[in-house]
Amino acid sequence: HRLDFWPDSVGGIGRLRGRYVGAALSNGNVALLVNMARNAGLAWDCVLSAELTRRYKPEPDVYLTAAALLGLEPHEVMMVAAHNNDLRAAQRVGFRTAFVLRATEYGEGQDKDLEADPSVDVAAADFNDLADKLIGATHDRIEQ
Image (cartoon, rainbow, N blue to C red; front, top):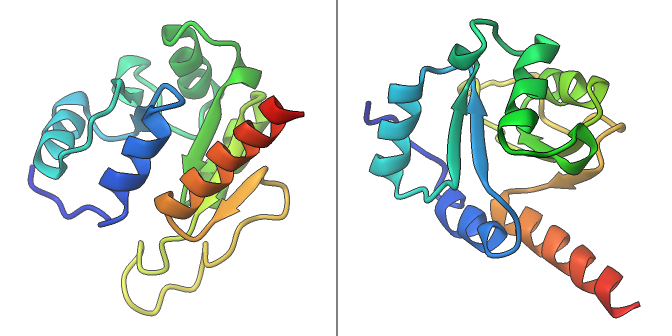
């Protein structure tokens, strides 16, 4: 499993992991996710798959099981994705959400998910931008 990854992922996710637990949650199987992470150099704290629930996103059980496995309440979790439908499903179970733009996620000529749904908590151009926004937001809250 040597799929391409987004070049901002390693640095941005690494910065976020300095402050937050970083976990992948995908409909892909665990073996695929582990191999992709190793190939890309993504240092996740945990790799979670819908395979564990035998259901698939956007089923609520997938998100709720992920939170439970991490020992977190849904409101303590932020789902980060490039797919607005995934983020809306995560919101419905109480997750906070962040949209990261991937303008060619579906290939050239992509016509959906080119901007964040207005309901997301944070919208970012890439993972570095997301890290800037979240780490800055946390720092600002601590300083007040």
